[in-house]
Image 1 (cartoon, rainbow, N blue to C red):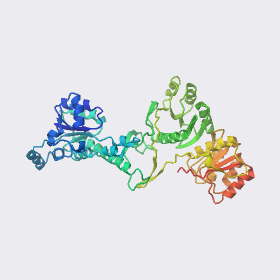
Image 2 (tube, one colour):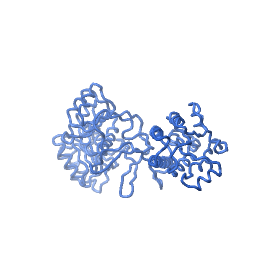
Image 3 (spheres, helix red, strand yellow):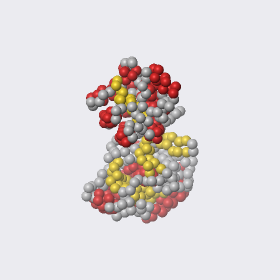
Image 4 (cartoon, rainbow, N blue to C red):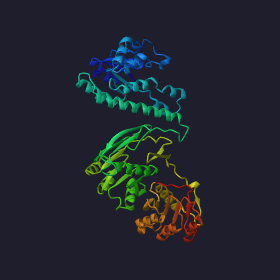
Length: 512
């Protein structure tokens, strides 16, 4: 299909001057609305004003400009339909072969603080989506471009085919256009629904960030998508400095590690295997935190994902290079230490340059058969002031530090979750068990002699006193848990018999 006339009406003018100049060089007539026309004329391009086609001036301060039969007939007319083309000829309407449009910046405006509601509403585009949908519907006769990233691709095809665009290209562009307007409408609906935490209808716009080699297993296809309304995402402002492409499991593990270290203000390190921590620690330096996290379970750390909230210096880089690590994530790297890491061909080195905070009120989604479970994100940190010491013994300050640390880590371990910690580092983690006492057994076994003098955290209440007694027998000297069991008195009695403190948080942190 030969492109002879293009209608350009965009809010995002990035790259438009170069694209329009390329169209003009191919002899394509440029038709445009007021703001876009001025932009193109300032770039030295000849533009046909939209009023010349409609015979009407823009109305209502720009609210009405492309909503006109002479525009939509030119877009919707089917070139192979004799009746359609006869109608255009009778009305003196020239066909429009290419529509270039991206919509008012509603999402950017509505996300800004303090913007008056009237301004947000004025950024709800009406004519743009209508025009884009019309062009996409008539893709057999018309091409539509909504993404500036597509300009170069479209120009290259036009130049290589004497001003024509293939049907396959027009179909692909139409799919992108409908996705574009659907995402736009989802953002508008979300703004109207903003006061409702769980509205009757919810629409997500997901943009593919990239394909993945495979899913959890080699026979599963996979890709990484980003929620368009999120301020940041798992890999936003993240640069890969070395290693092979990231896999599905790499990203799932990385997500867990970022959640853990992000909950600490002091230098912290988390080592992740199968989306659960095998070692977590904080320290005076990130070097110290890494060594303590690694010591928690060095065997399980083999081939893990290491996440830190401080830059990696040369000495630490050399130390990590000695280990088998699949992913290393940190907010910076010493240039002298980077070569030792990059020499590890299988190590994916990620540098985090993101400084934006997460969008408030983000929801968690879990896929189930034919739908999603949606919930608030479990992102709040529990305060010591809201916790209750329920035993005769009271934690000293050192124990309080370890208890709060273990409790913070515990919420990121698959339930049933048990964390043993000492000196602000995990020494034994048991999670993902159907029995809480089995989780205690695993944590105690992992800790070995290091359980002596440790504290124990449980993500939910102990239904019986067997779990606490097992931990106490291994050397646990303080326990933190939500409380709320029918047998709380028996559990508290076990702690009192051992003369150790027990703290109730009053809040559970299951992670299924």
